[in-house]
Amino acid sequence: MDNKIKHRYISDNYKYLIAFLWYFNRLFCSATDTMKYGDWIRDGDNSREPNTLVSTKEMFEFGFFTPEGSPGGKRYAGIWYCKVSPRKVVWVANRDNPLVTSKSRGRVFGIRKDGNLQVFDDVVGNGTSFWSSNLKSSSSSPNRTVTLLDTGNLVLTEYDGTWLWESFKEPTDTFLPGMKMDENLTLIPWKDQYDPYSGDFRFKFDEGNKQFVILNKTIAYWKSGEPGKFLSSNKMPDVITDFLLDSSKLEPSYKNYSTKYKVLPTVSTYSYKMLVIKSNGKVEYGSWDDKLWMAGWSEPSDRCSEFNVCGDFGICSSDEKKFPCRCLPGLKPSLVDKWESRDYSDGCTRGTQLCSGEKDTFRRLKMVKVGNPDSTTRLPVNNETECMKECQDRCKCQAYSFQAASDKNNGTRGEYTPPTSWCWTWFESLNDLQEENNTNDGGHNFYVRVALSDLNGNTSIASIEKPSRRRISSTLIVLLTVISIIGLLCICVVISFVIWRRKKAKRLDNRRSSDRRNRALHMLDTERC
Image (cartoon, rainbow, N blue to C red; front, side, top):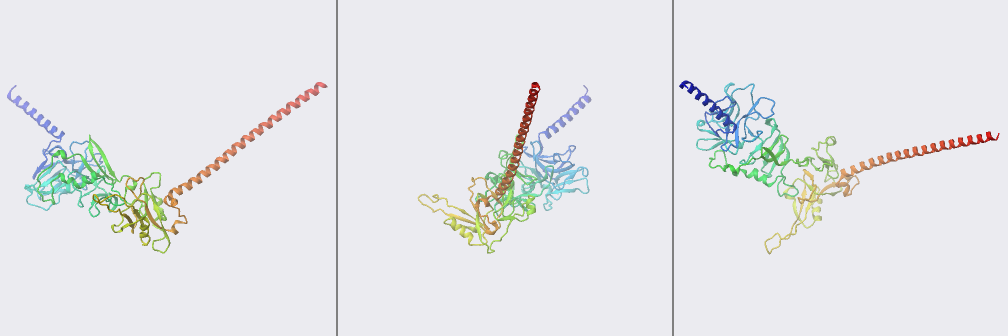
């Protein structure tokens, strides 16, 4: 083999080796985790530059993608789990401003001259921007780098290690270990499973009330509840609360974007756990296990979990055999037409308003969860009669509940602290009422104030506690009566028909017998002649 042929042989093999290594590199998510100023991620496999960033331990990958099942040729820059199939996207940069493949051909991500991270089209115009980190323009951009961490956090860093911007501060629909859910952080779902565009729901932390909330635009859709509050259960397990509020301990503590990045925890600290808000407003907590999404908790979990789903003065039942909503005793739907069409948002109203001079009474509801009373309305009392009087003496008091003392030695050793009974009263509209089917939460009976004139003369507790059941029983009685009458008529008809047939058969038998006797007599007379 001459040198020329040998050189060509080696050259061809070298090209094949380079191609093999490149595809092997792509297959196993092997790529750089950091880009400096002047480096670019270009959309398309024909580029000589890297198509993605991959975190050091190959946990996460950043690049351009089209959502699986998406009907249009829209391209987004985002972050997804590196070794999970099908692809699970956890962050999208240009979610509300996609690049359309038919209109843009130079889709690029990188650090631009103003020092910002940008997703732009370097073919159209002067590099039209489709997303930016929106930092102030800086002349130090040549010294900046962007890194994808093993937490899934994309970080823009200054030359001295200062964090200038991070994706964890601007999430989309997913909360990952290392984030911290404070009042500045909001999760917004995809429009649907194929479109990352911002949906209508919002998941955030209500710092004032120390609870998590889901908003449907601006209206409260779900609340986690304040832990430890009377008659209001905390719908979020402690493990998830800790995950949302304390998982930032996985990252270095920092107070603002200018804090210097120091030490990363080991990759073993991280798992595939996450919390996601779905397009239907439901929040799910779970993890990826053997390429499957395992949801361990979600809310709202049923129809009564939605906040105030039956409106003010309406009570919700999660029992599928019952109507979902009913009014409190003596109250009626505010808008009957909407109520009958199963739109309960306007709730119920009193026929006779309180403080109008009409006589009233209290009716008991068993095992009810209700929105928290004002903190100033909890009073120590000796017994339930005192509690009722506290509410009865104030005409604007809507309801009360008595919490009997627990006779336990709650002092130090050798000391005894007398137990205290508490009286809870409500002066505002009663909302988020739920009928509780079990007593595991230590629920209490709830007494609602109602005018005697609104009870229509029916003051029995049984008829008031379950009005829908009374209506159902009346309907059932009428139905059974009608069926019984029809059944009796059918039986009478059948019996009458049987009697008629028997009588007819008997008459025929008698006629045949008479005919036989007549023939016999006739033959006898003939023989005598």
